[in-house]
Amino acid sequence: MYTTLIECSSLLKNLSRPDYLVIDCRFNLSDPLWGQKAYQQGHIPTAHYFHLDHDLSSPITPLSGRHPLPDPIKLAKRLTDVGLSAKHQVVVYDESNGMMASRAWWLLHWMGHEAVAVLNGGLAAWQSIDAPITTDLPTPQAAPLWTPSLVPSVISTEQLWLTAHPAWQLIDARAAERFRGEVEPIDPIAGHIPKALNRPLTDNLQADGRFKTPEQLKAGWLTLLNGKLPENIVHMCGSGVSACHNILAMEVAGLTGSKLYAGSWSEWIRDPQRPVATGSY
Image (cartoon, rainbow, N blue to C red; front, side, top):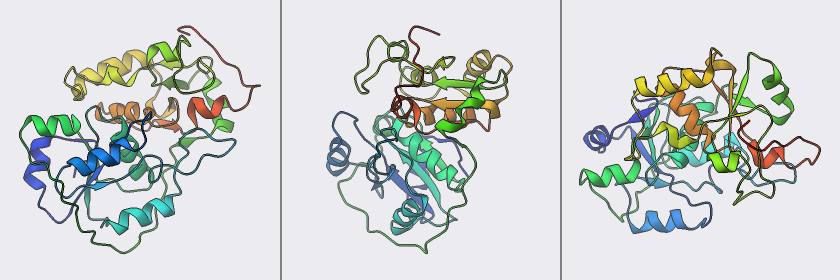
């Protein structure tokens, strides 16, 4: 069973197995239709497409961030409609670095399905080994609906007071210039939550878009955690998507149990009374 990452060679070897379910998660925040179009132009054989806004999030509300968590019952229905059962190994991928795929990975773990892994290096790595690409659409094989058993791994805005305790730490996965408040291409206010630390998701990756080794990841994360327990780490980003990449990286490193602040920066700034920091700290 693969629960964090899977290499392209392993997926290729197992692709024809009926107990494997592949999900394409490609998405572009600035062009929400891009991922669906890219999927139609070519995808890993047997893969089904899941849209970040429509499948992996619920509708935005006046108080929420940009990508609220989906209704787990609705997502479970969507997954079983394409064949997911408790016995399936799920493989999720995007174009390269795993940012979107890690959202799907985290959601399935949150819902109690452990056998889910991100394709290391995504479609770019798949194509680099001359693995097959198709435009054929898979025929859904619906499975019985299952009831998710949610894992308590989500922190709400109201619970963020926990991170004020010295044993806890909030970590922001956005690019350093966004964290510092120098630029903000998406949200109306720039900056970060006071006392958060910055760990851009790109720090988890090698130059080719694949994840660093578990040993490299562990060394980097232990330095940042500075003695804090993994289960007392809360991850955030702009809208609760790229933060999942940092959770995955910690899991690959064997540092298990960290949490997700699902609303993230885009929810935090909904209330003008909440404090905002700029700079590196």
